[in-house]
Every structure is written in structure tokens, then in C-alpha cells.
Amino acid sequence: MNSVNPLWGAPRIHGELLKLGIEISQATVAKYMVRRRGTPSPTWRSFLLNHAGGIAAIDMFVVASVSFRLLYVMIILAHDRRRIIRRAVTEHHTAAWLSRQVTEAFPWTVLRAICCATVTPRMASTSAGESLQWGSQKSSQPHDLLGRTLASSA
Image 1 (cartoon, rainbow, N blue to C red):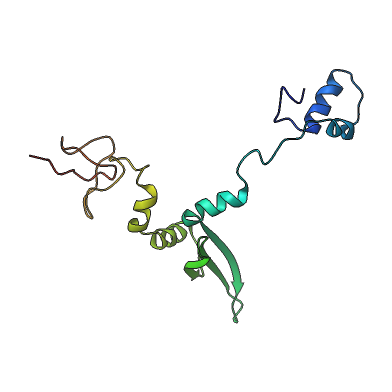
Image 2 (cartoon, rainbow, N blue to C red):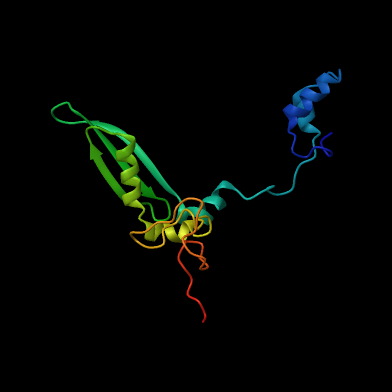
């Protein structure tokens, strides 16, 4: 059963054997299972090392001031160098306030390198003040992934 289903562990195989009416201990199943050689996939540590440049953490917590008012603190931390990208404090936290902090922490110039492959011309803006409408192209000119008109060769 272990060779046919290599991703099943001892608890799963033990449960299947009990369904078949075979009374056996889970420890016995684990003892006779074939051991895998090496790690079956990349480890969590290697994932973090490979992607640390694009990962950031947002932490929010509450601090009581000297006058016993509650202040809401938000910190954005970059994982690549463990540096603080942005910190902000407010008395009245809202979703709009939080989204504004994230937008200001990661401006479009930073996100362009990250999102370049996933942004479609319908989503991206053509210039600083002009944006494309959803579902329509303003001209028949070819566009790149960011929605900018490509220069013609003629």
C-alpha cells in the first residue's frame, strides 16, 4: 500500500488497513514503511531564500499612549534585508488607511518589476494620467504587458 501511494503516511495507511479489517498498530505500520531518500521537495528554508526579495510582512498592533488613548501601529518589514519599509500610527484605523499605507510603501515603480508578467494592458495605465478602460483598447497600436503603446518600426 505504501509503494502504490507514496504520499500516504502511517496514519492514513493504518486507517485504510482498519477499514479492511486488519488489526495492526500504527507504530507497526510506520516501522515497516519504506523510507524515502532525501527530501521529497524543496524545503521551506530554500523557498524563503529564493523568494525573500519579493516578500514583505505587515504587522499591526495596539499601543496605549500616556493619556490612555489607543494608538494603532502598522509596520511593513522587507524579508530580504529585514529592514523596515514603512511605519505608521493612527488613532482611527480603517481599511482605506491601511490600503493607503501599503500603496505608499510599494509605489508602482517598485511593483512594476514584480507584477510585469501578470498585468494585462486592460489593467495597467498607459501614462501617469491616462488609464485604459476595462475591456477596451483605445487604439489598434500594439501594447506591451504594461499597456504602453509600442513604437512602430515604420
